[in-house]
Length: 209
Image (tube, rainbow, N blue to C red; front, side):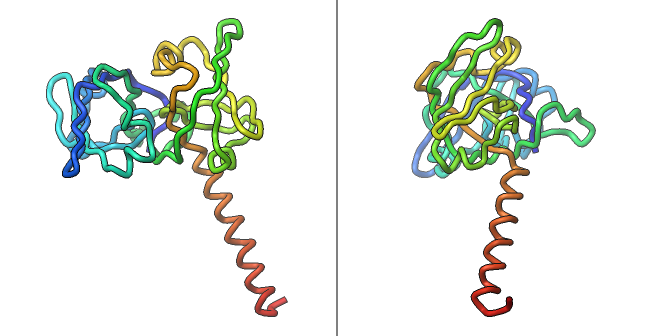
């Protein structure tokens, strides 16, 4: 489990993608202070497993399924990525519950200055917007953010200067693709409600009411 509080910006050092295997090597500093083979690390919000590490870098395996469902496949050598280690049991819960299992990708529609902050409007499909609510939580490229506006085709978040400086959002432009993870608690509630309704309909169909 993660919290959506980015620990540092890493840099892509190599990306090997073949039909047999896919591996991503990332340069980092802070997270290497306490890392072990098998540890979970969120890379732009995607939960990956460290398989190798050395001074100044670590390597993760990436499945083809992950490339297809995330923006990781578009990474290039030298690109910055958000990094966060899995939350320690005695750690601070600074953001919200983030699983690292993203729901899909979306595209930045616009970036508008608002004093010392910036508004990011994100175009998203109905499968993502169905899990996004006003003042609820959303993870964009693994960053825990609060939803400030929702329309039929997009949602918006307001970004403070610290978040811009400490994350990959500082280099994003309109048209760029980002990873989206909606609030996991909301997903569970939505599923339970759906199952409850289906159960009632089944009983009605069987003449139980």
